[in-house]
Length: 273
Image (cartoon, rainbow, N blue to C red; front, side):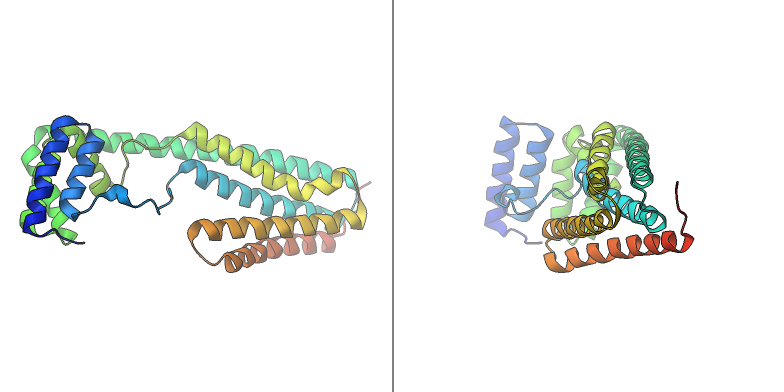
């Protein structure tokens, strides 16, 4: 972490004072304190993506799960019988069951995470009210552990502890790993999960509404493969990794799942009437 020299410290300390005198909102004070600590404006870079968004995570996971689940289910049933009504019924049932299950899981888990975060924030809030000096020293220790010189760590801790909202925000992020302003949106995560799972699940099922037999099986394989490649490429692009490598990995996972279930269905050889 870059440390400002003596002249920069004086300028930044003055800048901090000027900022908080005109705008004492916690977010503004946090930004000003980070400017003082690092010697630069943290808003000067915009290259980072939001990697913690519950909606984005639920959408990507939902689409991937929907695709792999239903391409496996459709081909598994088709391996036993290419009766179009049987495959269609199994696919629709898998789509609905999976979408509602994913949505319910996201709703419950994100709500539980949100309630746990709120409980921990309440505990931290009481500690800051009852033992402010101890909490300030604890904050300084956390900065020292991150390589900040002792004097600067204490100065920053004093700055951030001067406002109770800023102090809570800082302790929550550094000590608990929680963003107090974004502890989770259960309904949003559930909705994203439901919609994305449905989209992923309906793709391999789509041919069975318009064709049947071997043609439907081949179309399901092609659509599932293309969708897996596109999803993998999207994940790779967002993660800054090899688009081709991630796309092929996603395709391999989908192919293994679908191939195994198709083989099991073919071995069972149940013919629906």
